[in-house]
Length: 292
Ligand code: NDP
Image (cartoon, rainbow, N blue to C red; front, side, top):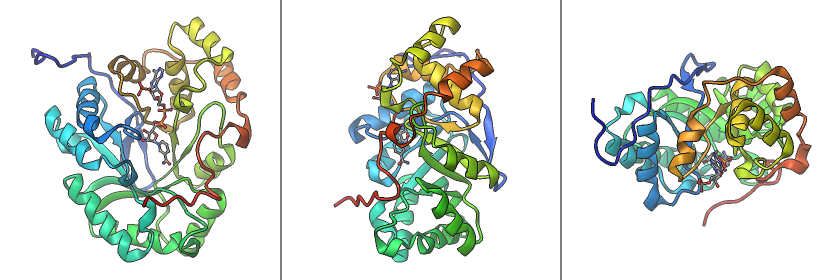
């Protein structure tokens, strides 16, 4: 088949899937749209789908859910062939607000959503009552509006509280993870409780790409630093969705399945962990941002 003018054609790549605890399979590699201007989002999503990405990670707070659907429609790829994740606005934890917010996301994304997350636990707001919010996600899943449900930025005590007070175990926990912040205690808890780990800011928004350990491995295996870091995540079993509005980087970030890292390479990259010092985003124990 000929590629339409202006569209990129690449050979098909099979992205592995991760089996979630609810029996559904998520593509391990996707495309994140945080900080993509809504005006640029449809074009970026269409390009990502042209390149073969079949998993898009958005959120109400990114302000670009409708534009994700526009990009999907422009691509000609069938809706059922793409996994879309979105997340509840921090301003909508109160149950009726959460119900309205979920309905809004469903409308903007054109129907049932593959995966929906509580974006932050917000332990200092709403009396820290993310449990009531979680029960609304459970209800929306039972109603068929959400197909899988999960959380984001949950620490071990938040996950333990959900386990004690609710029935559905989150399918995933989307947390900050990259070579400078391994987030190992939360990853370990998730691994022990069949909660999939989604690693946000997987290349630390570029901050790890000049690290000599990473550039040395990249030179030896003949790949870019970003590819090495993303491959490290893939081999650790985490789900990733790097963001880029640069077509060559979008293509580079998708080309992760024709090489492997050695156990020694993986260990050297894991050893770059700086603990909490390595975080680039907010701390879930204190984060209380609500959009105005
Ligand atoms: P990433 O780690 O994906 O880094 C994105 C940055 O790196 C951009 O500046 C991009 O530039 C640049 N970049 C991308 N690819 C390359 C490359 N191959 N070489 C060099 N530079 C590159 O950070 P994000 O914070 O965007 O995280 C990814 C996704 O994770 C988000 O889009 C979002 O979906 C999710 N996320 C979730 C959070 C949560 O609280 N749940 C918080 C933060 C992120 P450019 O675009 O100019 O090419």
